Length: 202
Image 1 (cartoon, rainbow, N blue to C red):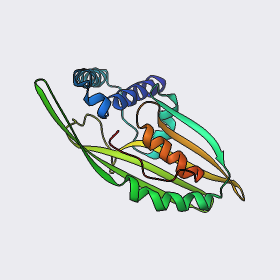
Image 2: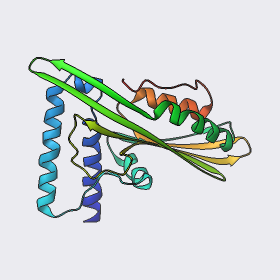
Image 3: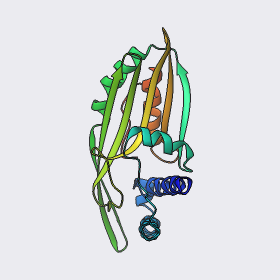
Image 4: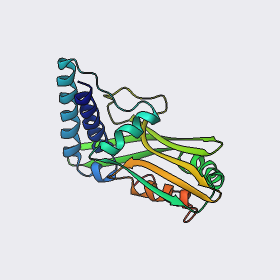
Protein backbone atom coordinates (compact mmCIF):
# COMPACT_ATOMS: atom_id res chain seq x y z
CA UNK A 1 0.00 0.00 0.00
CA UNK A 2 2.87 2.38 0.76
CA UNK A 3 4.29 1.91 -2.75
CA UNK A 4 0.88 2.48 -4.32
CA UNK A 5 0.32 5.60 -2.23
CA UNK A 6 3.75 6.97 -3.24
CA UNK A 7 2.95 6.44 -6.93
CA UNK A 8 -0.42 8.13 -6.47
CA UNK A 9 1.24 11.08 -4.73
CA UNK A 10 3.71 11.43 -7.61
CA UNK A 11 0.84 11.28 -10.12
CA UNK A 12 -1.03 14.03 -8.25
CA UNK A 13 2.17 16.10 -8.13
CA UNK A 14 2.52 15.70 -11.91
CA UNK A 15 -1.08 16.79 -12.51
CA UNK A 16 -0.50 19.78 -10.23
CA UNK A 17 2.48 20.87 -12.33
CA UNK A 18 0.34 20.63 -15.45
CA UNK A 19 -2.45 22.72 -13.97
CA UNK A 20 -0.07 25.33 -12.58
CA UNK A 21 -1.35 27.92 -14.98
CA UNK A 22 1.35 29.83 -16.84
CA UNK A 23 0.93 31.81 -20.07
CA UNK A 24 1.32 28.77 -22.30
CA UNK A 25 -1.52 27.05 -20.46
CA UNK A 26 -3.62 30.17 -20.38
CA UNK A 27 -3.59 30.10 -24.17
CA UNK A 28 -5.02 26.58 -24.18
CA UNK A 29 -7.76 27.14 -21.65
CA UNK A 30 -9.79 24.12 -22.71
CA UNK A 31 -6.93 21.76 -21.95
CA UNK A 32 -6.38 23.33 -18.54
CA UNK A 33 -10.02 22.87 -17.60
CA UNK A 34 -9.92 19.27 -18.74
CA UNK A 35 -6.86 18.60 -16.60
CA UNK A 36 -8.46 20.25 -13.58
CA UNK A 37 -11.56 18.15 -14.09
CA UNK A 38 -9.47 15.01 -14.42
CA UNK A 39 -7.60 15.77 -11.22
CA UNK A 40 -10.85 16.34 -9.32
CA UNK A 41 -12.29 13.07 -10.59
CA UNK A 42 -9.07 11.27 -9.76
CA UNK A 43 -9.03 12.68 -6.24
CA UNK A 44 -12.63 11.60 -5.77
CA UNK A 45 -11.76 8.06 -6.81
CA UNK A 46 -8.80 7.99 -4.47
CA UNK A 47 -10.99 9.21 -1.63
CA UNK A 48 -13.40 6.35 -2.25
CA UNK A 49 -10.59 3.78 -2.12
CA UNK A 50 -9.44 5.07 1.25
CA UNK A 51 -5.82 5.68 0.19
CA UNK A 52 -4.13 8.74 1.69
CA UNK A 53 -2.69 11.09 -0.91
CA UNK A 54 -1.17 14.53 -0.70
CA UNK A 55 1.05 17.10 -2.26
CA UNK A 56 4.47 17.64 -0.65
CA UNK A 57 3.94 19.58 2.59
CA UNK A 58 7.62 20.00 3.49
CA UNK A 59 10.85 20.55 1.61
CA UNK A 60 11.94 17.02 2.52
CA UNK A 61 8.78 15.53 1.05
CA UNK A 62 9.35 17.60 -2.11
CA UNK A 63 12.92 16.28 -2.34
CA UNK A 64 11.63 12.72 -2.13
CA UNK A 65 8.81 13.15 -4.65
CA UNK A 66 10.24 15.39 -7.38
CA UNK A 67 12.93 13.04 -8.79
CA UNK A 68 10.42 10.24 -9.36
CA UNK A 69 7.79 12.37 -11.05
CA UNK A 70 7.42 12.48 -14.85
CA UNK A 71 7.23 16.27 -14.74
CA UNK A 72 9.77 16.72 -11.95
CA UNK A 73 13.46 16.11 -11.63
CA UNK A 74 16.73 16.57 -9.79
CA UNK A 75 20.05 17.80 -11.08
CA UNK A 76 23.35 17.84 -9.22
CA UNK A 77 26.40 19.90 -10.11
CA UNK A 78 29.39 21.56 -8.44
CA UNK A 79 30.38 25.21 -8.43
CA UNK A 80 33.76 26.74 -7.71
CA UNK A 81 32.48 28.91 -4.89
CA UNK A 82 32.35 28.56 -1.14
CA UNK A 83 28.99 27.69 0.37
CA UNK A 84 29.15 31.01 2.22
CA UNK A 85 29.41 32.86 -1.10
CA UNK A 86 26.44 30.93 -2.50
CA UNK A 87 24.45 31.69 0.65
CA UNK A 88 25.23 35.40 0.31
CA UNK A 89 23.88 35.40 -3.24
CA UNK A 90 20.73 33.52 -2.21
CA UNK A 91 20.10 35.98 0.61
CA UNK A 92 20.74 38.97 -1.64
CA UNK A 93 18.59 37.85 -4.57
CA UNK A 94 15.79 35.63 -3.26
CA UNK A 95 13.55 38.17 -1.54
CA UNK A 96 14.35 40.88 -4.09
CA UNK A 97 13.48 38.74 -7.11
CA UNK A 98 11.09 36.02 -5.98
CA UNK A 99 8.90 37.57 -3.30
CA UNK A 100 6.32 38.66 -5.84
CA UNK A 101 2.61 38.67 -6.57
CA UNK A 102 1.89 38.16 -10.28
CA UNK A 103 -1.43 38.92 -11.97
CA UNK A 104 -2.11 37.38 -15.36
CA UNK A 105 -5.17 37.63 -17.59
CA UNK A 106 -6.37 35.71 -20.61
CA UNK A 107 -9.36 36.65 -22.73
CA UNK A 108 -10.70 34.60 -25.59
CA UNK A 109 -13.90 33.47 -27.22
CA UNK A 110 -16.50 32.94 -24.49
CA UNK A 111 -14.03 33.20 -21.60
CA UNK A 112 -12.11 35.67 -19.49
CA UNK A 113 -9.69 34.51 -16.79
CA UNK A 114 -7.62 36.27 -14.13
CA UNK A 115 -4.98 34.37 -12.16
CA UNK A 116 -3.12 35.92 -9.22
CA UNK A 117 -0.12 33.96 -7.98
CA UNK A 118 1.96 34.74 -4.89
CA UNK A 119 5.56 33.48 -4.90
CA UNK A 120 7.43 33.17 -1.60
CA UNK A 121 11.13 32.31 -1.25
CA UNK A 122 12.80 31.01 1.91
CA UNK A 123 16.55 30.82 2.55
CA UNK A 124 17.87 28.64 5.36
CA UNK A 125 21.55 28.64 6.21
CA UNK A 126 23.64 26.54 8.57
CA UNK A 127 27.40 26.16 9.02
CA UNK A 128 28.09 24.15 5.86
CA UNK A 129 24.80 24.26 3.99
CA UNK A 130 22.25 26.68 2.61
CA UNK A 131 18.81 25.99 1.14
CA UNK A 132 16.59 28.02 -1.14
CA UNK A 133 12.91 27.06 -1.24
CA UNK A 134 10.44 28.60 -3.68
CA UNK A 135 6.75 28.18 -2.95
CA UNK A 136 3.66 29.54 -4.66
CA UNK A 137 -0.04 29.99 -4.05
CA UNK A 138 -2.75 30.82 -6.56
CA UNK A 139 -4.70 33.48 -4.70
CA UNK A 140 -7.27 33.90 -7.45
CA UNK A 141 -8.40 31.99 -10.51
CA UNK A 142 -7.39 28.43 -9.60
CA UNK A 143 -9.28 26.09 -7.30
CA UNK A 144 -7.31 24.55 -4.44
CA UNK A 145 -7.86 20.79 -4.42
CA UNK A 146 -4.91 19.69 -2.27
CA UNK A 147 -3.76 20.49 1.24
CA UNK A 148 -1.28 23.33 1.00
CA UNK A 149 1.72 24.24 3.20
CA UNK A 150 1.68 27.58 5.01
CA UNK A 151 3.62 29.48 2.33
CA UNK A 152 2.18 27.67 -0.66
CA UNK A 153 3.00 24.61 -2.75
CA UNK A 154 6.66 23.80 -3.30
CA UNK A 155 7.88 24.67 -6.77
CA UNK A 156 11.66 24.35 -6.40
CA UNK A 157 14.23 23.50 -3.76
CA UNK A 158 17.96 24.17 -4.22
CA UNK A 159 20.43 22.81 -1.67
CA UNK A 160 24.03 24.03 -1.54
CA UNK A 161 26.49 21.94 0.51
CA UNK A 162 30.13 22.81 1.02
CA UNK A 163 32.51 20.07 -0.18
CA UNK A 164 35.74 22.03 0.06
CA UNK A 165 37.15 25.48 0.73
CA UNK A 166 35.93 26.87 -2.58
CA UNK A 167 33.71 24.06 -3.84
CA UNK A 168 30.00 23.57 -3.31
CA UNK A 169 27.66 20.79 -4.43
CA UNK A 170 24.27 21.93 -5.70
CA UNK A 171 21.24 19.63 -5.55
CA UNK A 172 18.41 21.21 -7.50
CA UNK A 173 14.87 19.78 -7.25
CA UNK A 174 12.58 21.34 -9.82
CA UNK A 175 9.84 20.81 -12.41
CA UNK A 176 11.00 19.48 -15.76
CA UNK A 177 8.42 21.51 -17.70
CA UNK A 178 7.86 25.25 -17.53
CA UNK A 179 9.43 27.89 -15.26
CA UNK A 180 12.59 27.92 -17.39
CA UNK A 181 13.39 31.55 -16.55
CA UNK A 182 13.36 30.80 -12.82
CA UNK A 183 15.39 27.62 -13.27
CA UNK A 184 18.09 29.46 -15.23
CA UNK A 185 18.14 32.31 -12.71
CA UNK A 186 18.67 29.93 -9.77
CA UNK A 187 21.45 28.15 -11.64
CA UNK A 188 23.04 31.55 -12.20
CA UNK A 189 22.76 32.42 -8.52
CA UNK A 190 24.47 29.15 -7.62
CA UNK A 191 27.35 29.60 -10.05
CA UNK A 192 27.65 33.35 -9.47
CA UNK A 193 27.27 34.00 -13.20
CA UNK A 194 24.40 35.87 -14.86
CA UNK A 195 23.05 36.98 -11.50
CA UNK A 196 19.74 38.68 -12.11
CA UNK A 197 16.00 38.47 -11.54
CA UNK A 198 13.85 36.12 -13.64
CA UNK A 199 10.64 37.11 -15.39
CA UNK A 200 7.93 35.36 -13.38
CA UNK A 201 5.25 36.04 -16.00
CA UNK A 202 6.65 33.58 -18.58
